Image (cartoon, rainbow, N blue to C red; front, side, top):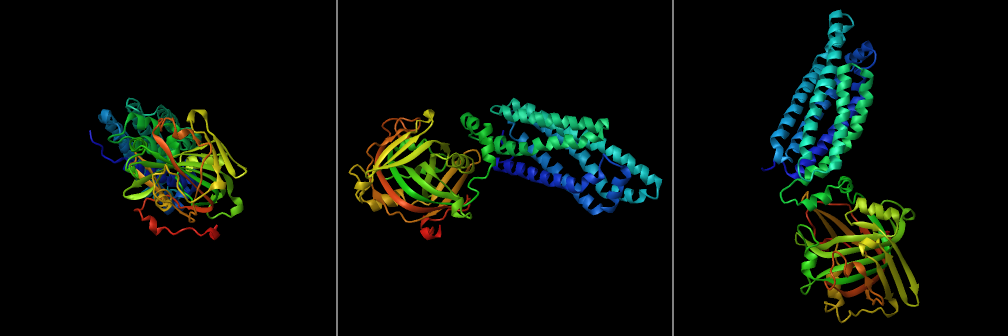
Length: 499
């Protein structure tokens, strides 16, 4: 059965529902709450009479919140094709609740202020207002809320019978609906003092739940999504990570010491590691991956002064790729020896950071580097770079005829690409940096475990091609973009004096 909405449309509906509910809660706390139980009826009635415009606008926002919730339920039902009849029944139950709420909100906006204004002098309107004040609690907080809850519970039960729906998300959903049932009980029982605390508990769970369902399940269901894709992407950690904007701030640093360790890789091995439209860029029939080993000086958001930056060691594994015709890189893995930077890099970028121990150690013309990753990662590095014999000559085993040719292919890259197969979206981060004054160096130890016998790179699938060295290189990362690609020649070099 075909889907009504594309995954990204379902995600947008979740965000719209979340945003409108946040605005509605603000309207409730600032305006509407002053006219609702509990509290003295005459004081609440006087507030409605004297604040008719703001009161009406507050209820109109809640009417919009009802609409967005129903659309969210439709988007959720759209992801449950094996049981779509029952899912549509759940939406129908919730829609009846919406009709009840819309009638109630219409009365609050257009009739209640008039009743309140006349109630001071006319007992008839005072009685009508008091009757409506009690009826609203039963009809909206009791009945309408119960219908929403029954619709949500039914969708949750259907989702549990749908392949790959994560159990943690079902548990979170159940908590929301149990609290919602408690609110309906409060509405029917007349215990008005319980409305505020129970409502607060609901929204503490409900608002993040909307974001998690939207970024998890609603974008997960699409043609071609495999069970492996879904299980990896719908874990609690990955769904939470997906809700956090990536590369939200421009960042800057200086690479005080930087080595580019270049490996030639069998093309078929590399293609298996790259997602969607991102493909390896080949030179002389081989793909290339560079390990960037760098001592980062004062990494920080670009608008902060230098003294507030963090100095640490960073290692990234970047593949030379093409995406939509543009050359760039794709990150397979990154390591940092600073806890905060590895955490921020993992959650705020698509560079796949890990926290690992790493250190440089100079010794008589050599610069030793050692990285100790988690044993399960098979990603230790032990290198001894011979700076005393640095030159401009490529090693005989290199696939490149000249250093200029190698630099053009391996270095002059100004875009990093990532791809989410569930949203089918390519993300791009662009950089500016200083010019590379490259020296070619040798590595006396050359132990790079990740490239030799790890789960991604079987023995014999990679070959060390060359190692480049550069010092005092200023770097600037722009924020994430989704605009059309620009050519790398359009990116001007970064002036070292600007940092």
